[in-house]
Image 1: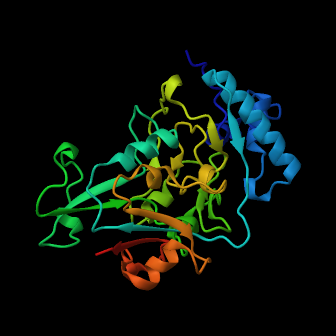
Image 2: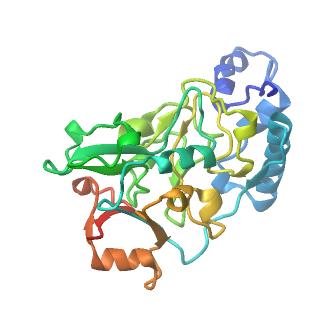
Length: 299
């Protein structure tokens, strides 16, 4: 049985600040853990020693809570790497295996249910028609004749509107192009959700629930570590995997090889070949968000 997690978010701490303003004893009613986490600076500004301490504390907390050994990586971006993603619309069959591989890998809540990937079913005769796309189709009947499928997730924009509106700078674009979220700094204002034109951000309205036996203990601080109620989350290209040289879970699970992933700065990479030789579609190109997630037609 899971142990009840201490309420230690910045948002809940902020609710107690009026007590301080009224002249009460400094930090009255707040635990030492609440105080420490509130005054923790944004993760990208911390020294290596500070990060090591935070990571160690999180590993201990998660191990005690879920009853299995946790690792929390803080591996930074690698010089010379800019991650990019490409998806072949002519091969995707809408099976949604990517959706559930993502859920399993990234510790998304099962109840209430959160999915970072949505697969849209569209009619071939209409082309990309978002107004009439069907996200509730029956995956047991795919691929349906006369239809094609378009998975949508965070586009990892070069010019991300979500980072511009975040009042605490909890979300930002890292050096390898991945747009990340520092959950300790997220106050749940949801401005990023309103700014994202792709519907790629998801708010935890309830306390996330993951059965102990299904929790993935291999995590990254800025990625798939367990979240709390009241924070926003999103796809991070499986940061805990790709910064170790692995593919995202959705790429590995795809039965048709529709999903491609690689280094945009490597002229010999598969993704560079696709961008230079295939018919490429940039989703909502007119918005100038400059995604690093591309759609293409392989045939």
